[in-house]
Length: 216
Image 1 (cartoon, rainbow, N blue to C red):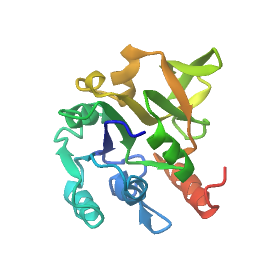
Image 2: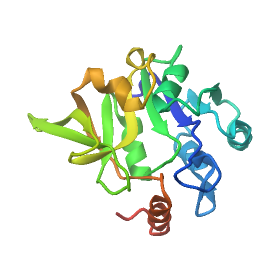
Image 3: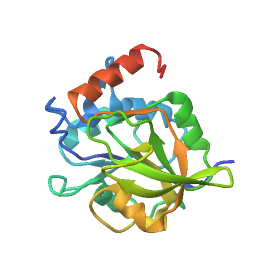
Image 4: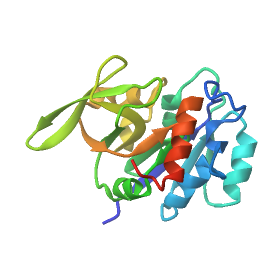
């Protein structure tokens, strides 16, 4: 059963820590840009909004080679704002749910199918392995796991920037996406196999993952 959903992909940042001179959505893993990998897995989604800022015209040009029905939202303050501001901008007049994805992440194809089939709110997390993670603190209740806090110092899982929320909850704010959803904790946790790409070490791990056929 499909839900009323808007997909928002945040691609406005400059990717300074990665040091490749490109916004991370344009970074290629095994010859394919990250944003194209997203679009291929989201081929059946009807309402996709991509937030652009740094190198916006390059992102738009590339995306339009694959889909011409994507909505582009400009975050003109991309140098001073985070992904929370991007999602808030793109959430106006959205469908009932918003699925928020970062442009700098690889998702296991099977797990993306799990995400797209999910009928309600969740916060996604993965095993802790990036160089500079935000972490999720969780608890279990009646056989289900819930996220109760985000932390820079301690947590069971790594926050990977993937969340599905009612759109009315994320239409205002700045900072990071997790700061938009913190007031609504606890929220069900969804374990996902992902690789976030913030640094060269992250990039090398992601490349190796793709080469291995997403074995993890």
